[in-house]
Image (cartoon, rainbow, N blue to C red):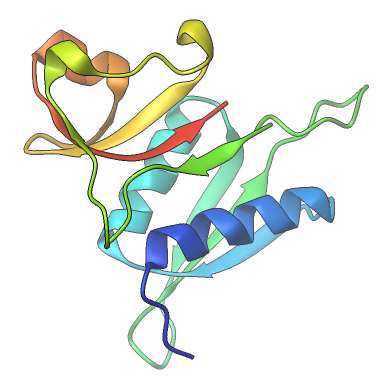
Length: 134
């Protein structure tokens, strides 16, 4: 299977696992996906994650999804891919979008690494807007 946009594939796997109420989802690994996973964990959107080695050298990211104990609602209500290989979306620090009036986060790939919109504003760096999460 040839995937032209691995980040869109990663987000779709998360979305599908949430819809199906899975506890754990596995996605093929890459450095960028690892960094996005770390941001999701730091911001409390996922319960836990584990990077695993596989025989084909690519590796696997095993993500434990987070649900509310009472309402059974997922911590992630929406994942939206912004920049794509065919149309990259770059924003400078002053023009970073607000996601859900500041309740959500935009994940950016910057010269300082993969960070959220709030961290990018604080550091005054722009970058490629990878996705919105809320």
